[in-house]
Length: 152
Image (cartoon, rainbow, N blue to C red):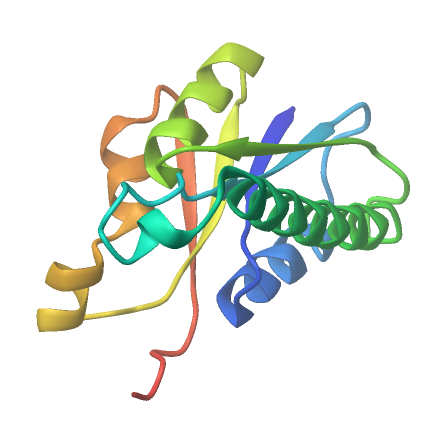
C-alpha cells in the first residue's frame, strides 16, 4: 500500500497524522509525506522594494520549516501502530491541490490522506478547499480527516 499524506503546519494536519499513525497498515506499506509551499507573490509596488536575495532567504526559511515538520511526522509514523514503515518526505512549491495530485499520480499512490479545516460558507468560498480539489481530481482513493472548524 502506497500512502501519500499531505500536511502543512496546521492543527488539522496533526489530526491527519494521528489518523495515519494509529491505523494498522499492511506489511510492506510505504508512506510519502508531502507539504506544498505557496508560490512567491507576484511583484507589486510594495514588493518591488524586496530584493531577490530577501525573497530567496524567505523561501529557504519556509522550506527548512516544512522539512522539519515532515521529519517529525515521519518519526511519528515510524512509531505508529504498524511499526516502522518506509517513509519519504517531499516539499514542493506551487498550488497545494495541484502538487498533491501530481505527486500522487507520479509516485503511484494507492490512497491520499489529507486533513480538512471544515470551513463552510464564505470562508470556504474565499479560502478554497484543497481537500475538495484533491478529492475531485485524484486518480486514487482519498481520505479526508475532518478537523474542528477554526474559530475566527
